[in-house]
Amino acid sequence: MPLQYIIDGYNITNHPSFTNLHKKIKDSRLALLEFIKYKRLCGSPKNKITVVFDGFPKISEEKNWDAEINVIFSRQDSADERIKRIVENSGDFKNIVVVSDDKEIRFFVKSVGARARGVEEFINPANLAQARIKRKGRLKDEGDLAGLELTYSQRHKINEELKKIWLK
Image 1: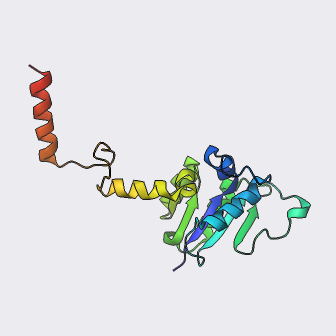
Image 2: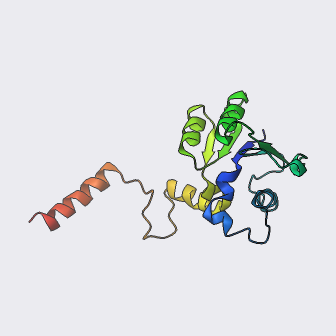
């Protein structure tokens, strides 16, 4: 079943990692749509993509920006409120992925059973892959211990060794 990506547009366009990537295109909103499309950040072309921006579009922007990406302007509401409403009105929470760094949105999304992804994870999929590898305990760099789970006996052994060194 295809996923539905709901993206907080200005949350990404104002992120430092994104602003460094799109210097050639003046309109950051258009740059975001092009970036999502050509980098295939949402995976399969069957996945639905909705980008939500705060405010009103310019009159010249009233048309649909891209046939593959649904662009919504929140108008009087905030983009956060519009995103929450879209998620609430969707029947299948497990197939929704919301992209935002806003903690309130991420908490809400997770509370209803949908998935939340941060902007950095979305912009740079390699970051997401590294996080998954670390969570599974398969570390590529032996010096990188982030996410490594120790058993009780391993923790006990380490504590005993530290006691011998530091508590003489």
